[in-house]
Image (cartoon, rainbow, N blue to C red; front, side):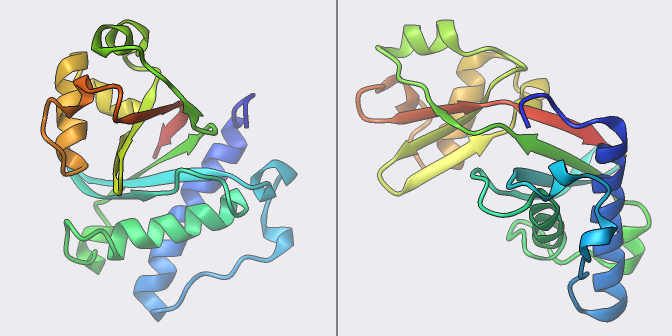
Length: 191
């Protein structure tokens, strides 16, 4: 996915996510795809994505995969369902909300280890708006997609919020000797 998706592929994935939710609300079953339904080979290659739902400016669900372990089209279907009906922060999407919800998809590059000598090194090398970040300490793990920089443009605030999302102390990111960092980029597109 390094060269990104074209407009037709993005449009197909957004329509697929919407059809998936509509189908589930109507039938209670998962939308089944046939090979002929997919317009390009690239969409059948393993890919990792996040599907985000918004109601107006408010987040309504966001679930995704950090590692590419299944064809991208299946990852979109699974994560659309999980964002709408399985995000523990929200109650399941209703048919009334479905009409108003806006869908965004972020297709991720493979996460790469991002070792930091110290907190200053981490701050200097982390690129606002470009890098998605995963932090990991023991079993605690959390990520922010690159789009989160729009809400949290200051690096220190971004890192503190990410630590709290993982259930860690806000300033835990400064202890670079005991936290693992991974970066990735995302091709982000919305309805």
